[in-house]
Picture 1 (cartoon, chains in turn brown, yellow):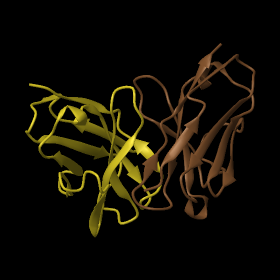
Picture 2 (spheres, chains in turn cyan, green):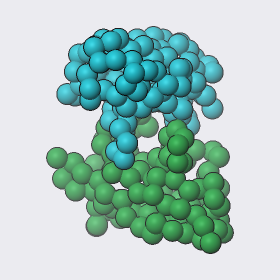
Picture 3 (cartoon, chains in turn yellow, orange):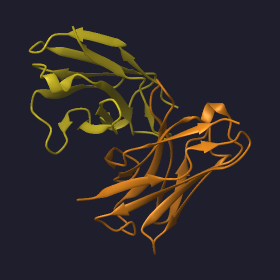
Length: 108
Length: 118
């Protein structure tokens, strides 16, 4: 099973700042099958990024994903008020599907 | 617009069976293009994939495989989850979701909290 470790656990930033979130896999993720989700309190996760760098339908271009192998990054170029949330990564290159523990992006 | 809605008891006693149903509207659950899955999230913790069902079978995470069954009722456009012999560790928000094969989940239900307690 691939274990995904996200860092930092919490990121305290101000609106307009750049956020850089990390997701590290315990072994190489096949074909960069890595996704990112956003989750707000009391809501279901929303798919942001798939295939490590492709934005899902309707996702603003301030969200970008990069990486390959075992190291992946989600970048939010300029934080908007609605971007403060928990972000989780997920690998789907091998079974079982696994998720990271999440990074909380909070208002500083 | 595809919508998914979980339903079932919010409280289950230890050692009993947790049963949830996901009703799909705005699309057919019979499509061979999609998988239908269950994911859970214990309070304050990360997401855990439980398993998925598709037109020719089902697949489960190994840690829960011995206790979990996912089934589908195409006549009602629903799929269901059963978890046997539950303990407090099974307390979580349970989500149903759609994926294209076992990949990313693009549509989710709102989630339902299931508490295991006597």
